[in-house]
Image (cartoon, rainbow, N blue to C red; front, side, top):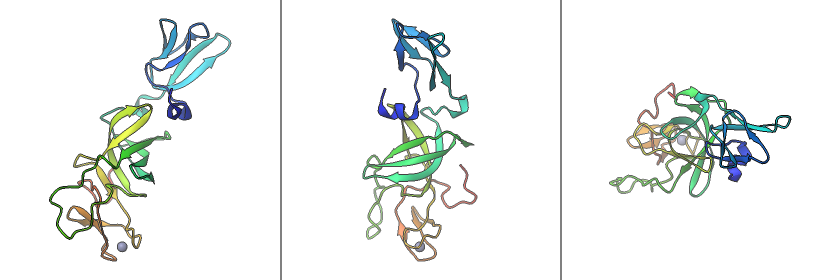
Length: 196
Ligand SMILES: [Zn+2]
């Protein structure tokens, strides 16, 4: 089990929970040749009286899987990745404490960008509201992508003066101070109210 899963106390189908000498498989668990494994995404529960280990599955709507889409806010950025706090899953409010990782390396700035324009920057910035596709779950990390037209930044504040930005072609512009910033904008960027 990876440190990330441990931190969230979350197990995925096939994860080892215990060995059969220690525990019997309870709900949403099974015995795979002496290894008790999980059948579900959820949290582990141990019943010490019956020596039974089971998985308390997350409700169906809260299970994130590849192909889902999420809406959230960029809460941390590093050189190569941005971490998005997930507030909506497939358009429904999510109350789980999920964060996804968006690679900033995989984003190739559009070719044919006008000369003299701002240098291509990261597709998202700290504080942006973004819509992303879940493309994989590896080691319990939710990997996100903004490659599709509908995916990307929905709402951004000007890095210069802090006012909400509007669309200026393929870039975000600030009507207040004239600042222009490179982002990967969702097709409905700048529309109000924000559609998760
Ligand atoms: Zn501004």
